[in-house]
Length: 165
Image 1 (cartoon, one colour):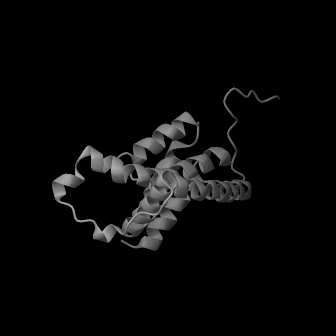
Image 2 (cartoon, rainbow, N blue to C red; image 1 turned 45 degrees about the horizontal axis):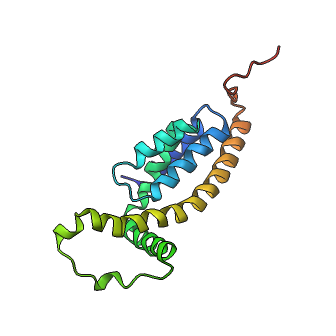
Protein backbone atom coordinates (compact mmCIF):
# COMPACT_ATOMS: atom_id res chain seq x y z
CA UNK A 1 0.00 0.00 0.00
CA UNK A 2 1.38 3.38 -1.01
CA UNK A 3 1.16 5.68 2.03
CA UNK A 4 1.30 8.90 0.02
CA UNK A 5 -1.57 7.83 -2.26
CA UNK A 6 -3.65 6.72 0.75
CA UNK A 7 -3.11 10.06 2.52
CA UNK A 8 -3.98 12.04 -0.60
CA UNK A 9 -7.13 10.00 -1.19
CA UNK A 10 -8.41 10.45 2.38
CA UNK A 11 -7.47 14.12 2.64
CA UNK A 12 -9.39 14.76 -0.57
CA UNK A 13 -12.39 13.05 1.02
CA UNK A 14 -12.26 15.67 3.77
CA UNK A 15 -12.29 18.45 1.21
CA UNK A 16 -15.19 16.90 -0.71
CA UNK A 17 -17.55 16.91 2.29
CA UNK A 18 -20.43 19.33 1.78
CA UNK A 19 -20.66 21.07 5.12
CA UNK A 20 -19.52 24.30 6.70
CA UNK A 21 -15.78 24.72 7.22
CA UNK A 22 -16.39 25.01 10.98
CA UNK A 23 -18.29 21.71 11.12
CA UNK A 24 -15.62 19.88 9.13
CA UNK A 25 -12.82 21.44 11.17
CA UNK A 26 -14.67 20.55 14.38
CA UNK A 27 -14.87 16.94 13.25
CA UNK A 28 -11.17 16.92 12.41
CA UNK A 29 -10.25 18.40 15.79
CA UNK A 30 -12.43 15.89 17.65
CA UNK A 31 -10.94 13.00 15.68
CA UNK A 32 -7.38 14.16 16.34
CA UNK A 33 -8.13 14.68 20.03
CA UNK A 34 -9.55 11.20 20.52
CA UNK A 35 -6.68 9.75 18.51
CA UNK A 36 -4.39 10.74 21.38
CA UNK A 37 -6.42 8.95 24.04
CA UNK A 38 -5.55 5.44 25.23
CA UNK A 39 -9.17 4.33 24.79
CA UNK A 40 -8.43 1.33 22.59
CA UNK A 41 -11.53 0.33 20.66
CA UNK A 42 -13.44 3.39 21.81
CA UNK A 43 -11.58 6.15 19.96
CA UNK A 44 -13.78 6.14 16.88
CA UNK A 45 -17.00 5.65 18.83
CA UNK A 46 -16.08 8.51 21.16
CA UNK A 47 -15.22 10.73 18.20
CA UNK A 48 -18.56 9.92 16.54
CA UNK A 49 -20.49 10.63 19.74
CA UNK A 50 -18.78 13.95 20.47
CA UNK A 51 -19.01 15.05 16.83
CA UNK A 52 -22.73 14.35 16.96
CA UNK A 53 -23.01 16.10 20.32
CA UNK A 54 -21.27 19.25 19.06
CA UNK A 55 -22.95 19.10 15.63
CA UNK A 56 -19.59 18.73 13.96
CA UNK A 57 -19.09 16.60 10.89
CA UNK A 58 -19.08 12.92 11.87
CA UNK A 59 -17.35 11.76 8.68
CA UNK A 60 -14.51 14.23 9.25
CA UNK A 61 -14.14 12.97 12.83
CA UNK A 62 -13.88 9.34 11.68
CA UNK A 63 -11.39 10.19 8.93
CA UNK A 64 -9.24 12.24 11.33
CA UNK A 65 -9.24 9.45 13.93
CA UNK A 66 -8.17 7.02 11.22
CA UNK A 67 -5.47 9.39 9.96
CA UNK A 68 -4.18 9.79 13.51
CA UNK A 69 -3.78 6.03 13.75
CA UNK A 70 -1.14 6.25 11.01
CA UNK A 71 1.34 7.20 13.71
CA UNK A 72 0.61 3.83 15.34
CA UNK A 73 4.27 2.72 15.25
CA UNK A 74 5.14 5.75 17.40
CA UNK A 75 2.26 5.35 19.86
CA UNK A 76 4.28 3.51 22.56
CA UNK A 77 6.57 6.54 22.76
CA UNK A 78 3.55 8.89 22.76
CA UNK A 79 1.83 6.86 25.52
CA UNK A 80 4.94 6.90 27.71
CA UNK A 81 5.18 10.65 27.19
CA UNK A 82 1.48 11.05 28.05
CA UNK A 83 1.87 8.82 31.13
CA UNK A 84 4.79 10.87 32.43
CA UNK A 85 2.97 14.17 31.92
CA UNK A 86 -0.24 12.81 33.46
CA UNK A 87 1.65 11.36 36.41
CA UNK A 88 3.34 14.72 36.97
CA UNK A 89 0.02 16.60 36.76
CA UNK A 90 -1.65 14.23 39.24
CA UNK A 91 1.20 13.75 41.72
CA UNK A 92 3.43 16.79 41.34
CA UNK A 93 6.52 14.69 40.69
CA UNK A 94 7.95 12.76 37.76
CA UNK A 95 7.48 8.96 37.79
CA UNK A 96 10.29 6.51 38.36
CA UNK A 97 11.81 4.87 35.33
CA UNK A 98 9.27 2.57 33.71
CA UNK A 99 11.91 0.04 32.72
CA UNK A 100 12.64 -0.72 36.40
CA UNK A 101 9.11 -1.98 37.03
CA UNK A 102 8.91 -5.78 36.84
CA UNK A 103 5.38 -7.17 36.81
CA UNK A 104 3.64 -10.35 35.74
CA UNK A 105 0.99 -10.43 33.04
CA UNK A 106 -1.94 -11.02 35.43
CA UNK A 107 -0.99 -7.87 37.38
CA UNK A 108 -1.36 -5.73 34.23
CA UNK A 109 -4.99 -6.86 33.84
CA UNK A 110 -6.17 -5.74 37.29
CA UNK A 111 -8.31 -2.65 37.98
CA UNK A 112 -5.72 -1.22 40.35
CA UNK A 113 -3.11 -1.31 37.59
CA UNK A 114 -5.60 0.22 35.19
CA UNK A 115 -6.16 3.10 37.60
CA UNK A 116 -2.46 3.36 38.40
CA UNK A 117 -1.32 3.53 34.77
CA UNK A 118 -4.50 4.33 32.85
CA UNK A 119 -5.57 7.44 34.74
CA UNK A 120 -2.24 9.29 34.35
CA UNK A 121 -2.11 8.28 30.69
CA UNK A 122 -5.66 9.55 30.13
CA UNK A 123 -4.91 12.85 31.89
CA UNK A 124 -1.70 13.20 29.90
CA UNK A 125 -3.51 12.47 26.65
CA UNK A 126 -6.00 15.27 27.34
CA UNK A 127 -3.14 17.63 28.13
CA UNK A 128 -1.23 16.64 24.96
CA UNK A 129 -4.21 16.18 22.64
CA UNK A 130 -6.08 19.41 23.35
CA UNK A 131 -3.48 21.83 21.91
CA UNK A 132 -2.93 19.63 18.85
CA UNK A 133 -6.70 19.41 18.31
CA UNK A 134 -7.05 23.18 18.65
CA UNK A 135 -4.30 23.78 16.10
CA UNK A 136 -5.80 21.19 13.74
CA UNK A 137 -9.19 22.95 14.00
CA UNK A 138 -7.80 26.26 12.76
CA UNK A 139 -5.62 24.65 10.07
CA UNK A 140 -8.48 22.46 8.79
CA UNK A 141 -10.94 25.37 8.84
CA UNK A 142 -8.57 27.50 6.77
CA UNK A 143 -7.86 24.75 4.26
CA UNK A 144 -11.52 23.77 3.85
CA UNK A 145 -12.70 27.39 3.57
CA UNK A 146 -10.05 28.13 0.96
CA UNK A 147 -10.95 24.96 -0.96
CA UNK A 148 -14.68 25.72 -0.89
CA UNK A 149 -14.08 29.30 -2.00
CA UNK A 150 -11.77 28.14 -4.77
CA UNK A 151 -14.22 25.50 -6.00
CA UNK A 152 -17.17 27.78 -5.19
CA UNK A 153 -18.96 24.97 -3.45
CA UNK A 154 -22.24 26.00 -1.86
CA UNK A 155 -21.94 26.27 1.89
CA UNK A 156 -24.99 24.64 3.45
CA UNK A 157 -27.20 26.87 5.57
CA UNK A 158 -27.15 26.32 9.32
CA UNK A 159 -30.06 24.44 10.85
CA UNK A 160 -33.04 26.68 11.44
CA UNK A 161 -31.78 29.38 9.07
CA UNK A 162 -34.30 30.40 6.42
CA UNK A 163 -32.73 32.10 3.40
CA UNK A 164 -34.37 35.33 2.26
CA UNK A 165 -35.31 35.70 -1.39
